[in-house]
Image 1 (cartoon, rainbow, N blue to C red):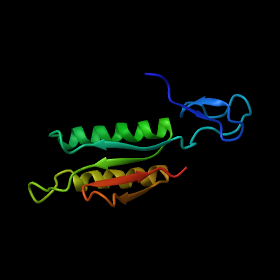
Image 2: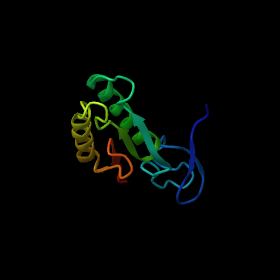
Image 3: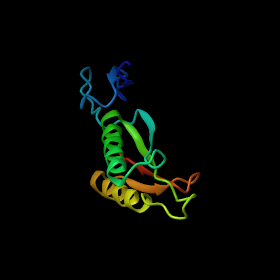
Length: 122
């Protein structure tokens, strides 16, 4: 698997996605440039405990920040089989804390009541 590439928004010099803080050619700010769409992670449908789900969410947010994703979609479930989701409230609370920490915002996924998106505003 190769390194994801993007271009400098100012001079179009090829850059490894999310790795450099400045373009080596023109010196323009490169870190934080959105070069990929949403990173999607399902934390509810493989029998995850809260500790496992939390670890997946933390890793996904770290990866999204490092690789220039516009945000992270977390599928936390909504309890369709039991009537209540064990992970939903905990996952939403963690996403809210990341939104505050990174200056992003959290929103429900309009197409899935068992998912929320952490938009990383850059």
